[in-house]
Length: 175
Image (cartoon, rainbow, N blue to C red; front, side, top):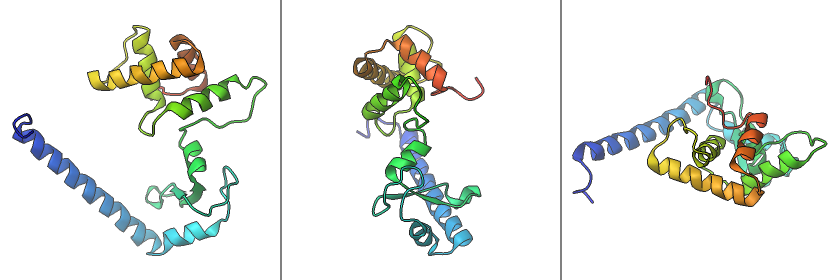
């Protein structure tokens, strides 16, 4: 494969990986400096159930808001953390359960690295609208996600865009 990749690109990839390794080590060092070595264990031991879902925190504990951004870590279940991070929408059930059903249905087909913004871009591409960025490969993935969402929800691309607009999902900040 070395014949297909220029040396400059290979060097760039190696440097990028080294930077990621350094950043990870620095973040861990910052946590240790601010909280001490046992802070994560103490945070995990504080609660017996998730503040968001109420699930017991026996295994699969995530810490939300690492202290390096100035907020104390909050122990949550995997599902609670996903709700907080807006991987799925959580809200009070409305008179019309339809929006929550759409979010749940799309949440089932979305992979971890797929975002609401990606779904929005896929719907725009299907409708022939300018997607506002993305490479050919990422746009193909976005269209694939949108097609799966359309098939699974029984909605059109325009219906999904309207629903995302109403929920303010996948909007580009400052646009």
